[in-house]
Length: 145
Image 1 (cartoon, rainbow, N blue to C red):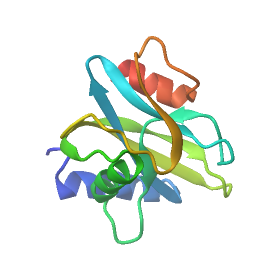
Image 2 (image 1 turned 60 degrees about the horizontal axis):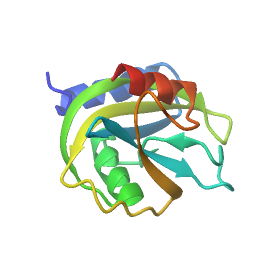
Image 3 (image 1 turned 90 degrees about the vertical axis):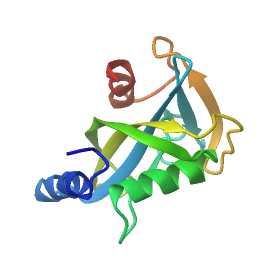
Image 4 (image 1 turned 45 degrees about the horizontal axis):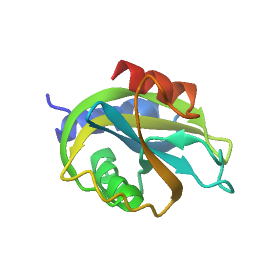
């Protein structure tokens, strides 16, 4: 079963729901020339100033992969070319006190420039060995992917 199959994606959602997870986020790990694309949260946002991979909430009626494509485009202006792998998930407490599961996918994009930010204040193509301030979960994800 491929990571883009409806059955695989539905299984991820079902497992998270069974574990009592209340929020789903889809995230893209975009590598280019040995570097990964990071975006920085606006200072006045929840976890402001923290660097992260492009990600966003799975909306009602959307699959995780639908959200992955939509959020990557909305947050960076980049279009996903291929989803090449599922690289795991991590859970975190969201701004409302609930638990969110972030599903992380390795992707390729149609082009790497220009980056058009709509929800973040900066972007960086960071070397995995020299990351700015990211969460431990994102650091581990980047180092192991």
